[in-house]
Length: 320
Image (cartoon, rainbow, N blue to C red):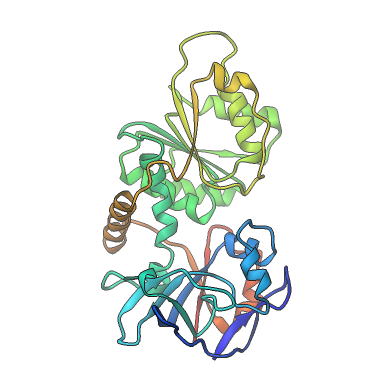
């Protein structure tokens, strides 16, 4: 079969022949239809993610661990749980039988494979305790998941949505998707702190944070009051770290601000995830969500893997 194969840590996948996978006991063969290439996949290939060990030990190996494909009987399914060296960026792969679920009828595989990015937006509710009418700040709203989170917050009834990101054009696009105000993070520290305060209105209720690092450190500075009082609770939901893995957290930022830091997995159960997925599917069918995907043939993976012009778009590889 043809596959995208990585030969060394940090290498670029090459389109080449690779032995066909053979299902073992309890496994099923998948004919791959679409694979979303995410930052996590690149981090694993680069050896920077904590879960990269098994992939690196199996080199040469095929990256990506989930996607959309068909079973031998033709049923279209979402799949995950691939085991190195067999990943998803190939014409075929194998996964455990319990790691497949039917794709709702009528969904384009290239869109179905990106729906999980939209489900992340529900963390404002499951982890952040969001209620309709509240103010939501989306940190990193110009990325793929961030743009979808803005739309999800609007559909869930946010009273006000503030979105942060870089590049004026991208911020205009986010505003068109439903953000009431946007903040450019590519400014000086003092300017960014001021912007956070000016756009807070009566205060942020939930922050969905895809950035961490400098922007979130400055947000926490902006939310730390200068005098003792009764602070409004602000629930910061940590999702990603595209701006940095660490930050400095002064004690006062928690002691006096009302800030509550939680991870996106808080409140996540099979039931809440299923409910979020079903709602995203319904909105997708109704055309209420905008998915910005860049479809490329698997044969072009080497060039696509290193593209730098995909800001706000999800790269989706389609085996030919």
